[in-house]
Image (cartoon, rainbow, N blue to C red):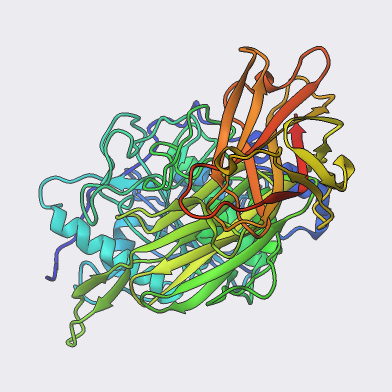
Amino acid sequence: MSFSYRVFLLVVLAFSLTTCRVDGQQWKTDVGFTQLSSEFGSGLETGLGVPVMFAEVANGGGDYMPNVSSSNFGSKTFVYGSGPSATNSHANTMSTNFYGSIGSIAPGVGNDPLQPVNGFEANDWINFGLGFATGTDPNLQPYAASNHSYIATLGGSFTEAVAVNLLERLDFSINQTEMTTLVGSSNSGAGQLPALWVHGYNCITVGVTDGSHAASETAPTYLYGNGRIKPEIVAPSTYTSFSTPMVASAASLLHEAGVGTDAVRSETMKAILLAGATKDEFDEWSRSPTQPLDLRYGAGELNIYNSYYIQAGGEFDGQTGVPASSVALSGWDYEPEITAGSDRYYEFVVPENTLVDELSILLTWNMAITDVDPSGGFLAVQSLADMSLTLFDSDNGFEAQVVDFSDSEVDNIEHVYLKNLMPGTYHFRVNSDMDMDFGVAWRSATKSAPMIGALGRKLLDGLGIAGNLADTQTSDDTYYSLAPSPTSNFSKQKIDMIVVSETTITEPGFVGFRFEASMVGGPSGDVIQQLRLFDGVTSSWELVDVRMATNADLVVKYSAAGDLSRFVNQQTGEIIAKMTWLSPGFAGSPFAWTIDLDQAGWQVAD
């Protein structure tokens, strides 16, 4: 299908400039730039030499450019892509946040005369830059970052078919040049998503931190792929017109920092920005295995501090089997091709006596657009992979236990987000149903949480036959060996041991228990293993884990939820656990068995 007429249906996203915060200072602190700048000083990248563009809806006088002679822009070189222009106030505020010398976090953008700021009137750029008016292929967009703080809604000659054609053109252009493209949602918290450019697959849609934007919570995408989650990220401005260039500014800084690496590819940059986003600003942020992002706030609020350190963590190549080495706790990867039905694996290790306070893994890939018109026109064929992201706890063997996963049927983003991950070896896996390239990024921060070993024990059933309680302080293959109490009924044999510990943290933010044990002398599957924690509020035992004992060391990790203080005595700091092993009824000959307990202890953190 081709279109040869021009569209003039675009509107700006902000309707009042008088109440918008434009001082350029507080938002920098909110998104982590002030902290980042204090650590790097003059050594921090500024976006110098990064090619950028913006498209802006003209005002009544036909103007689309900022006040280029102001102190915010006086050091910069501009290209007037759509002809002469005086000052457009909306473009002025947008540009302040995007690349302003005072107002942005990428003040070096445009200061290199060889890489000027390229400005376009939005309709002109759509009609001729994207080739809509001519029906031809889009022009190459040789920009690292672009900003689009305007919308269009369906109506009149602007039909769904036209909107889809334009969205395909933008996604096609992003794939051609790897341009990181930021687009804004509309400023209506309960309204339907606008047709442009929010529905794009390969762009990044931006909302505002206070949630007063159109979002999938009330109306998900309805064309060019129904039911997808938008926006993908938010930033702290009053209007989406000005939150969008905040993210564009962050992308520009990261493009300079990542020059010459695959971190600047559109998929990877998107993953780095979204993996760095924070959730603490939102009381009700949520995701699920089939819903990768929050329906209103996406991945969360922009945080350039987090994203910068993800990118600085380096690239780690995914492996097709068990990785030979671990990745850093923050980092990224770009894979040029994963073949249909295959996997990529990444291993990371949480050190002993620590917790991963927060783990964010973000997988992104693009909609592939192929132009099949050999005559020079534009006829798009869409192709979208279905990818998944799975996190495994591998302490008991490679891929032994699924911790969490993300597998949306419609989105081209998968996201796993967890808090308080206990020590151990973990793997995450990327899978695809078709040949595709992808970007993945992750961040984590550890905090100290020393293992609290048992101070005392009480054997309700069973006998200690070798070693002692001190041997359970660390995982070192030095065992405290236990045997069931002697009995003529082998199906009633049992070991029941209470261990008592103490913590100085009486109002914890995290409570977890870990133990490691193996069965000796009996076949796996014939002894039941149980873990109970003592609830001081109800004065009862809470059963938290049940499984079969194994002949190899089996690691059990339990992270408590709900009111954590129920496990901690508020006066004494006492914490109590009970481990039980027992023989169920069985057919066949009786067998003798013992338990080697390698480690047992708590982790408690603020």
